[in-house]
Image 1: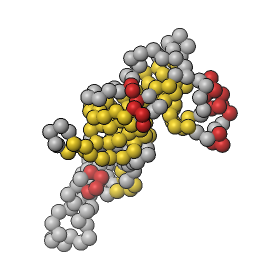
Image 2: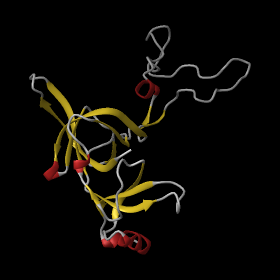
Image 3: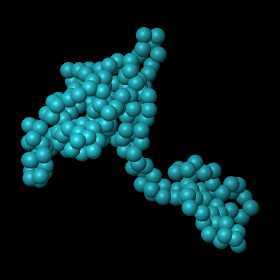
Image 4: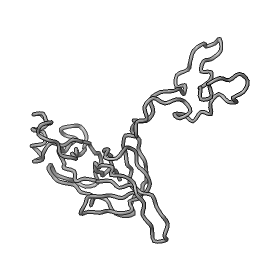
Length: 205
């Protein structure tokens, strides 16, 4: 699948030809440098390794310098491999947002916003213990009973409980490309994508 590495800029909305207001996300897609070409003969599989967002020399180790030097590029902060690219590309080639066209559909992958440690009402949508009467005291958002009876006398794996929420890899599929701004490397897709502002995302078609 062909794709690029990008950065989420933020959300906005645009009007279509019928005057309908459409929420959309602006993504800075590329330019990405091909830092390595994987082949079946050498690596056992075919893929392209892309690099995005320049890294300062201060934060670059020698091994990274040598790796990116082969591609004739400076060190990159984000490196991702893409399998099954539609076209053949060479080492050091730069891929831009022109890879995408208006009207086609893409999948966007990112890390969702971290919410920290949350209770069952926020994390799983529990309704709480129930009525505030019948002796209930300060337990309206409690999870209730979690264990089994005398047999098997344990809490089953996968029980929905309080815990860390967010911070997971999420892929949103079939987002329509509304606009491609080639001179600024911007991609405008319909709907929302995971992650906070300025977070890295992977766009695939």
